[in-house]
Image (tube, rainbow, N blue to C red; front, side, top):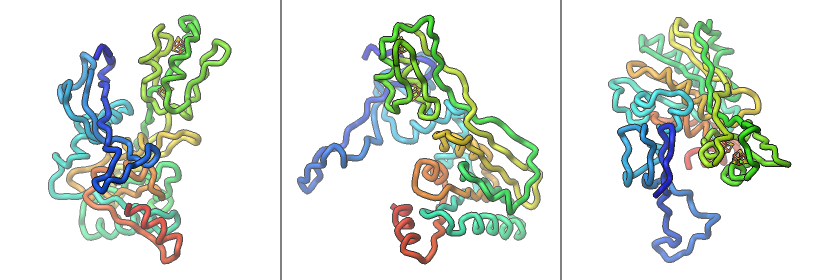
Length: 294
Ligand code: SF4
Ligand code: SF4
């Protein structure tokens, strides 16, 4: 393949799943799962040594690359997801299909109960769209850092209005209207494709702030941190990953996840030793619990 990725990126060809089940049922396109595996067909000169052309790619690798783009260290992300550097203690994610079931109450009380037993505990509120553990914990935050992702920036002087960037964007986050390129940052997923396909170099990337992570390392009796996604931003998983940088291999880490079953929850559960689902005895609670269990 003649593609030459830049900036540490790789090009992955998805391995399509079979169109027919073992029982002979033909699965329509709309019902087929998106491929979870692929093979590397091209890579940048400065790509990590962990990858090679022809090598397999699983969701694990893709998350490592995504993490790099949002500022999480590769080694750390790798260790978290593979549990290779953790000894003794655990990561417990508290989730719930339905909101309002008492997930926060459970997480906070579990953290206090374990800490009072003398355990080393970290409580990480990863419900980044609406964190509320801090209302009960009342921490004094002494650390704060921005969570940023790369977003495209247009240079009108170089642009020929060819439209390739808009055609390549799978998220409809970029449009070419009357020789002007409009970028909708809230829809942009920071994939870098538009910058890559632009033949004139009219698109570059700049870091844009999508939220913050606040931490209270001195809080007693346990360490507390949470993330806050900016209103209107879509990339909650990136902020969740940034909060998870505070995981401590020597502690019992309690992650309070968002309600629902969407990407932020999956990110909060990823790499955990166990997920604990909190529900309520109602038909809605049961329905959403089934969705969460899968
Ligand atoms: S691909 Fe580049 S040159 Fe073409 S419209 Fe987009 S920004 Fe302009
Ligand atoms: S970075 Fe990706 S999602 Fe964002 S505008 Fe470019 S192609 Fe679309």
